[in-house]
Length: 83
Image (cartoon, rainbow, N blue to C red; front, side):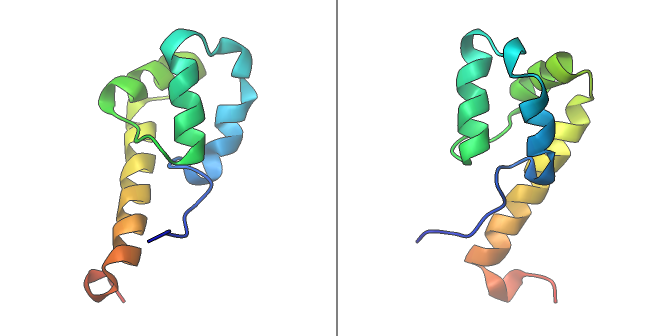
């Protein structure tokens, strides 16, 4: 089943991800592409790397991933979603 979803786990913060594409090197570049396409979750390790890359906080990225996960599960299980 194809689920409707935000642009990526980071939702509206995809603009933030697009601000510094020149900093993506090695494995982070691959994760960036997967995160944007919604194929990869933001793990704690990825959150730490994104924190360093964008001078944010790892909690920002984990919270965005959590919001995305809750959104997806509310679509999959509407009977459990809050009204």
